[in-house]
View 1: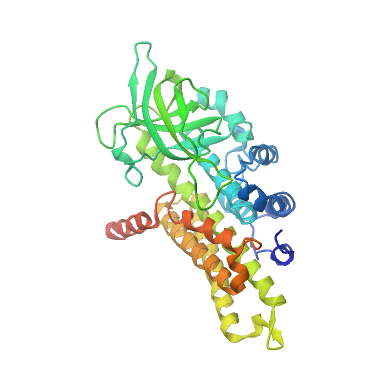
View 2 (view 1 turned 30 degrees about the horizontal axis):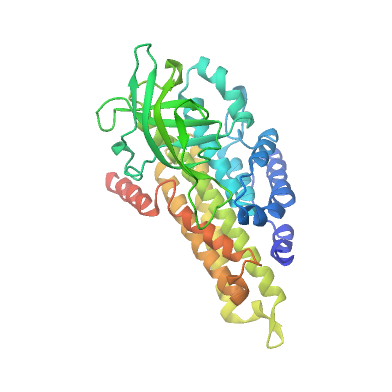
Length: 394
């Protein structure tokens, strides 16, 4: 059982937020209530049992969290990214697998919402944004992770005008559990302009998930390779036209990186809160350990890292909301937030000492979950490349 004080501080000392409207305050408060009342009590056991929380996603969909940043006329919540990300932070801080899952689902909806035809959006988008259907994002391959233009999965034109997809996609979040996948596949041999985007059903004939990966963290989030053996897709499953896939994928990733940044900030906040709660309760030499300068300064550095990561994330989100270029800022946010989550969660284990190394406390789980956030949605080395190239262009 997780000790009571690792959640007491989090409930009574919420993140200090500046939200744009009273409505936004209510929405984030709802996210917080759901996170602490419904997600946090389930997280430790579900992660230990590697239990996929499908019903949790349905409930979040019914509450409107799976379509938050999309226009109301499309069936979404019509909320700015600034608000969506702070809700995602609350959800991810309580249960990182769920936060990551919401982020991936929202990213998987992006191509259809932004580049689909009116007929395509009308046909599929309402169920997607309502969370009735849960999504996955199929871009990476075993030999084409950080370099998506090297992908080999191919969608070949068939005689009836549709496509037949053959190949494998690796590291698919919700792989085997999703109801639909946003798939990127090669439709010509042109390196960057030969990739197209498709909306595919999760139970398509010829689509086979491999056994889930055995991971050190996020065990409640299924990650699997998907094998495509001549999977047939009708013409209307093509999103944005042939050859537009890589640009669509990169645009979606800019927004998806902000989602991962938000989950990382939530995770870092949870680790900080757990450490502070412990340091207030634990006494040595006649006083709480938080009052010893060595530990107090460490906690101060952890708090500074969390606040800095949140500010960086929100700056990128506000640029996105204003229609300004935000790709470089999204990479900075993803880099800063996930590095902060790794450092803060590691320091939280240190603050708890021997207890931090046990599974009786959530600190060790936070540390394991933080590591992968430096890897997916583009490794932090790739983020540095993106940032450096932006600086070189001026």
